[in-house]
Image (cartoon, rainbow, N blue to C red; front, side, top):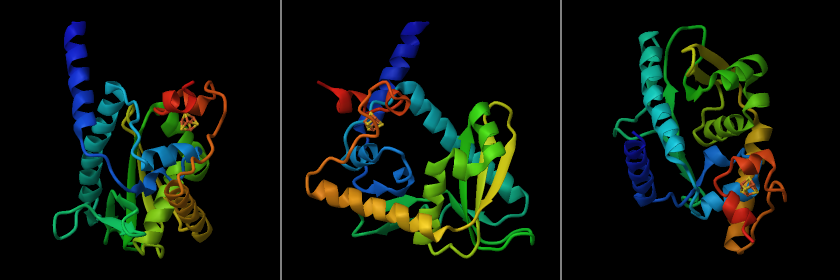
Amino acid sequence: MQQINDLLDAKLIEKHRSQEKRNYLGASMLGDECIRKIQLQYMRHEMDFSAQNLRTFAIGHCLEDLIAEWIRLAGFDLRTRNENNEQFSFSIANGKIARHVDGIIFSGPDFLKYPLLWECKTMSNKSWNDTQKRGVLVTKPMYYAQVQLYMAYLDLEANPCMFTALNKDTSELYHELIAFDAEAAQRYSDRAVQIIKATENNELLPCVSSDSSFFRCKMCGFRNECFKK
Ligand code: SF4
């Protein structure tokens, strides 16, 4: 019955809009191809998420908890919260750049070295197959940037990050070890500084495209904002 769907959608969107918006630049965004998009998020502009998007994000969080359980079952000392029961996080530049991380693995099977960063994603079949074939750096540059910054800011550069991806359609797992890349970490850190400075100077950074039908813009929640007349 469509009326029930509509009601649930409306309530989910209402709840999302009532939540406090972050007032920092999330390190997970810094690898996005569009610097304007990262800046608009930092400026706390409202992104138009559909109820379907919001459900997808929520399901992803639940699945992450399940995957963490499987990893612990395999003998890894994976912790997703610190001794104060808070998520592991960092905050730099007077709190202007911050992020929670999925977890840290402190010990485990001896074919890996510890401690190491754990990053977990869930993907559609197509996206997962592509990642498995061509790797995170090529297929998911945003995730690559994210883990590089996390390793740098949490002093976890010594050992590669364990990247876990679950195929939501087939339940297959993919694991990749991503080594620290100092040059990339510096590049994304510089990008963060550029965004913060431009915002403080009331400058809007460039759009990735001037064409609203560009594929990145077509999928972007700021499309109306960037291309309004
Ligand atoms: S609509 Fe396009 S240009 Fe505007 S923020 Fe999104 S991706 Fe960037």
